[in-house]
Amino acid sequence: MKRLLLLLIPLLILSSCSRFQQMMKSTDMEAKYNAAVKYYDKKDYYHALQLFEELISVFRGTSKAEMSYYYYTYCTYYVDDYTMAAYHFNNFVQSYPNSKHAEEMQYMYAYCYYLDSPIPSLDQSSTLEAIDKFQLFINKFPESARVPDANKMIDELRLKLEEKTFNNARQYYRTENHKAAVVAFSNLLKDYPYTIYKEEALFLSFKSSYLYALNSVEAKRVERLKLAREEYLKLVDNFPQSRYLRDAEKILESIDRQLGARNPGSASVH
Image (spheres, rainbow, N blue to C red):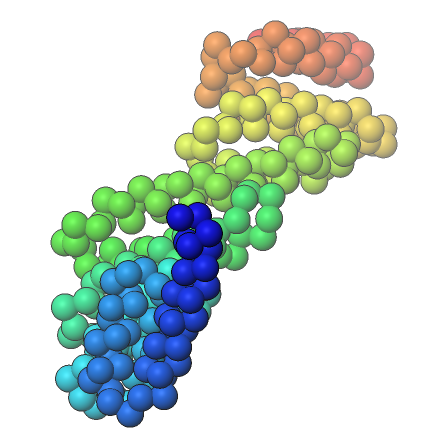
């Protein structure tokens, strides 16, 4: 039986290829359409794609044009060509704005960018595009049952942007570029005021500000130590029981000692 199967499998493959080639050469467009749909239903998107590619031109201006393009667009999606699929999902909506599939295709347009969104360490152009396209979908179809999923994915994508922004700021801190770190953490908190990284960002911003002050020229040191002290206040105002409080207070004591040494009459305020 095994030998028989080994002999039959190549024959079945050859037979299948032969039938497909015959259909590709056929001038019976109705038969070709039906064959393409069958390939699609069997999830043979590679063969379906080739047939629909011809049919979308042949049926242009006819009743089958829309569905041919609908199937063709999904074929590009199912063969994992998300860039091309995104183009066609969008083009479908532009070509058939009143179609019953317009809402679905608008959603899939955004979803392709979502699937193309890379890990946080890489360029986030697709992430930004996905957020923009999902928001466009929500604005166009606010009553759609797909809106909750769209909002959920927007939140997920924004969290990825937060993570990238935080990691970039932390990298400045780790490479001892303290001035850039302070600016980067400030931008993070401005763009994402409720970020999950807020507590750590405030502490590292405080520490970076302190280290930047320490490495400043004498004429600038007092002013920058005072600015570092303000960063401490931001941390404790937002997180009175912060897990970084002990380390932060040690740094604050150092700041107050240095400020006191430069101005003996000044009082330390906690």
